[in-house]
Length: 529
Image 1: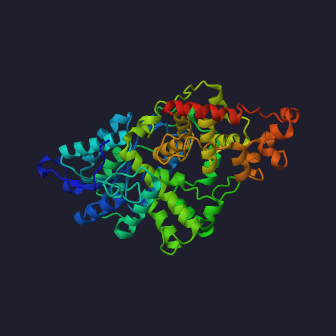
Image 2: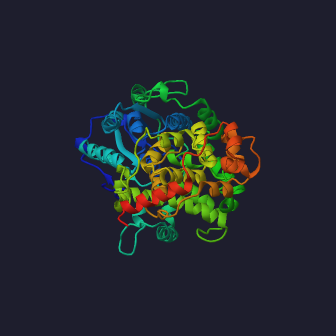
Image 3: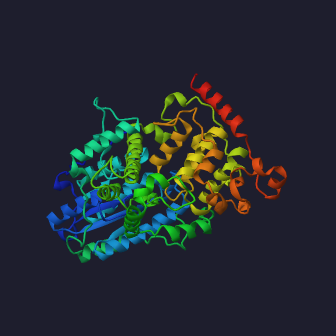
C-alpha cells in the first residue's frame, strides 16, 4: 500500500484551470467517514483557505453503495449513515454551507464523480481526510492525480487517528507490531507535540455568500439523500433491509447526529468513565460508552474523545484514575489497529498478519452446520447464543461478548476467522475494517499482539464471570428466561437432559474440551510445531 504522506497541497498553473467566472469560485471539502463539523482537520483547512480568498465553502459527499457493499457494510449501517448525512446537511445549512450529494454507480467511478463535480463547481481547492484501506488509498490518489491534471489545488489530511501514526515509530524507525510499546511512544509523542491534538473549532458560518451562479450549479448537481422509507441504494436490495428490531434499537439508542455523539461522550465521562475498568466487561449492564458507531462514521473525532478523558483525569494519560486510563488505552488501540492496516496492507486482503499462520487449516464453508448454528445463535452455549442474538436483533454487540463469540467460532468450532469477520461487518452498525480485523485476528491468534494460540476462552467460565446473574443471557435467549440461578450458564450440564429438552433450547453442538484440543492440534500442525 502506498502510504498517504504528510498533508501537502499541489497547485498547477492557473492556465490549466477550467474557465470559470470568479463569482462562482469556491473551496470544497469532500466528506467521507468524517461526518462532523467540529475538529475536522480537512474542513478546517478548507475554511481557512476559503476565508483568505474571500470565497465560499461548499461540501461534497458521494453515495457509493457499490463500494460500501463490496466492503460488506451492514444495511443497518447504510441506513444510519444516510440518516447521519441528512443531519450533517442540516447542520451545514444552519451555517450557510451547502452540501452537494452525488451518486457513483460503481466504486471505481468515484474519482471521476468527485473531479467532475468540483470542476463544475469551479473549485479552487479541494480538501479531504485520508482513508487507509487499500481501495480507498487507490481512490484518493487517483483523485489527487486527476486534480493535478486539471490544475485544482488539493490537500489530503490525516484525521482518522488521534495522531498520524507514521510519527509513532521504534528507535530504528520501524512501525510497531506490539501494542504496549506503541502506546508508550504514542503518549510520549502527544505529550511532546501538544499541537498535534489541538482541537479545531467547527465553522459558525460560511466564509463568503453563495452567488446565484454557484447556487444554480449546486442545485443542478445535487441529488436527494434517501430517507428511511426509501429503498436502499443499489446494489443493496429490499431483502437487505435490516430487521425491524435492529432499526428500532438503533433509532432508540444512536441518534444520528454530531450533537448526540458529543452528548454521549460527556455523559459517559461524567457518569461511567472513572469506573470503566471495573465495569466494562459486564454485558448485562449498560456501562460502556457505545461511541463506536459515531467513531466509525466520524460523527465525533478520536481527539475529542481523548481530550475529554485526559481533562477528566487531570491531564494524565497513563496514570491517575484507572477507569479513564483504561478508556484512553481503548482509544490508543484504535490508532494501533489503523497503524497495522496502513503498514501491513495484507490484512486488507484476507491474509493473516502472521504469515506463518497462513497454513493453519480452517473450515471455510458457509454451509458448515456449525457456522450456521453460530450465526443463528443456536450453539447450545448460552453466552455465545446471547451475543449472536443481540447482534441479530440490535446490530450491535457488547465488546466482551465479541471476544467470547469470536474465540468460540475459531477455537471451538475451527471455523475460519474470516467468516466471522465478514459476518460482523455485514451486521454491525459500528463495523470498522481496522478494528474488526484486528479483533478477529487477535481472537484467532493470527494477528498482531494476539492472544497465544494455546489460550482459549472457556465459554462457561466467561459466562459465570461476566454475566454472573444471567441477566444478559435471559434478555436474549428467551428459552432460558425462566431458568434460575447458576443453571443459566450450563443448562444441560446442571439441569440434566430431560429438563433441558423441555426448554426448547439446542444441545451444545460441540464438547468444549474435545473441540479446543482438536483446534490446538490443527494450529500446531499449521505453524509447524
